[in-house]
Image (cartoon, rainbow, N blue to C red; front, side):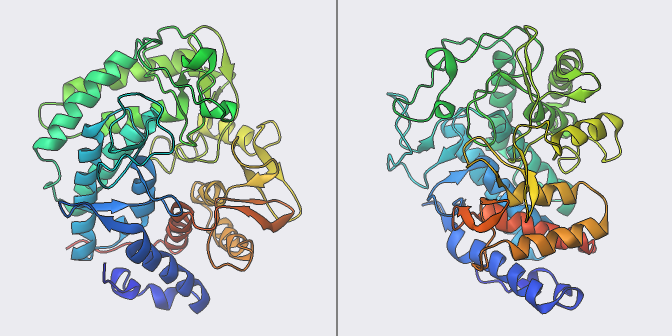
Length: 407
């Protein structure tokens, strides 16, 4: 896509230091020139970075900062990306990552009849919510609805139908066991996942990290999905969506809140897991997802836990502190989570010091990594992770309250 960053965000160059603008420009141009591909029908396909596949979730957060632009080419890109997400969802609603064509490329063929479109078939509820989020933000921000076409209606009908089915998940219906891989790459109990009881929430096999859930009801993903159902404004679906959202909310209130704070996962049988992961949706990110305000007492109590050593994936060292993940090394924090902590703080000073931190811990590469060691930023994972780059861009824009003026 041939589009200058200064045209994408007019005036931004004058509001931040040249070094910061250059980094924003590099991230945006990398998105356009290296990450953005096309499918055979011309619809956009956005690879996650160093892996040549498109994740439904990642693609939403990779373009999130672009929602602050009013450039016509950006609007068209976002509308067509929403169409791409819907197209891929309809290929296999239980898949999290896809190929640009039915070439059979995959991380691992985990199902005998796995579609050649599917790169990875990990069922993650947040993938569905991410589709709804992007579609809604386009409509709200630009007043355009071309993407809410027949395919979108078909996808929405299927999504609600499957969500109601997954409220009463059949553990034999989705078995995920990846032999020879780390435990978090497979569901427990011989690939069937832990037993669960009915709560009204929707089952999710995997987290936004692509790591297996310990318990089947993932609270941040259910909150995200619930919120998008509540905000859904599509004729013929409002009542179905509202009923489903109400059932999910009741389940969260009954099973997901313990001692005034949100659990990360529960099973509906009395077990719960208190933690948070770096990937969005997370408990930390709930105001970023528009689920709660930052000053919500329940969120504040949860946030205090997440950003403390009580959270098993919180790490603190000489350079940084923040949230990591199960599949990255111990004592490694994720820039995405560091940025999300700032984006949900509503504190301009925190946002600016966080930008300084992210820029100084890139090991001189000029790119934001997946994770880095809290004591030595030269130890990091993933050279090129577009989601991290673009969350940094979103924080830059938020730090100066950048937005376009609607006509």
